[in-house]
Each structure stands twice: as structure tokens, then as C-alpha cells.
Image (cartoon, rainbow, N blue to C red; front, side, top):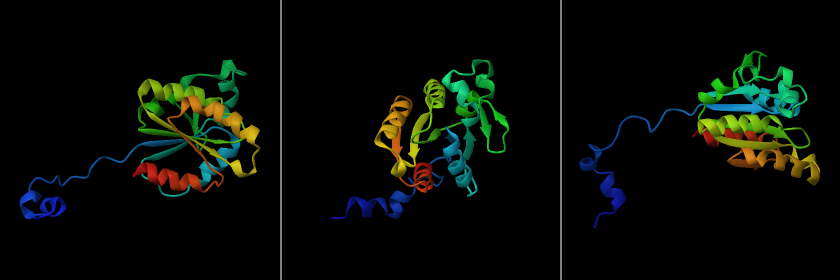
Length: 172
């Protein structure tokens, strides 16, 4: 008796195969939430990435925490790595996945706004906490509390290099 795998590989079954690729590449938005994670995101952006856009919310961290409401608007809330202002709603609308990168011990107030925009558009969110090896348990707990409500997947990393491996896996 021929196995199912062998039967599916036969010439008779080949006519039912789809020759096109399985799907289009994902549009991934990687957003640094603080100055410390911005350094890691900028370093990561130097590599060649298909379908990934690297942004920062750290320039608007005060607006996210409520300390500077006069500066806040969804239309000009993110920056690309060259410092150009980007529209949060437009960036989320063109995304399949948003990866928020934060450093333990920093503020991640921007995650609430980004997470809400992603929820409205049904865009998957992942949060990555960096630098946990040198951070206290208290700092890590505070960061987890800030990010957990706004991320479908939460990753704690003790090595900054982990983000590259994670993004590569998420894009596949």
C-alpha cells in the first residue's frame, strides 16, 4: 500500500498543485518605544529586510504619558529612522504585524496608543522587552504590566540580538 505522502507526490496529483507562492510577504512595522530600544532598532535596520519598516515612538514619549498633550496627534506620532514624521494610523493600516520594542526600566506609555490602533485595525502585535539580564525583577515587572494589555505575544529577551532571530521567524 502506497503511503499518503508518496501518493501526494505522484504525477497524477501534481495537476492539483498550486504553482504560485503561498502568500505575499508580511508588512512588519518595528517600533522602538524608548531611547534605549531605538539604538537596537536602528542597528537592526542596517540589515536588508523585505517588507519591514523601522520606526520610533521615543520622540513622542511625553505625549503618550500625558505630559505633553498639546504635541500629541495621531497624524504625526511616529518617526522613521531618518527623523521624518509618520502617521500612526497610516502605518498601522499598511501593517500585517507590529513589533513594539522596549527596554526594561524605561517607559512604554506609547504601547497603549499603538496597541489600541492595532486593535481597531485587527493587526497582530508583538512586544519584545530587551536588556532583561541587567534589569531588576521590579523593572521587568513594571515593563510587563505596561506591555501585556497591548500585545498578543510578549517576548522577554536577555540578549539584544534575539530581536533579529525573532523577526526572521515572524516574517516566514
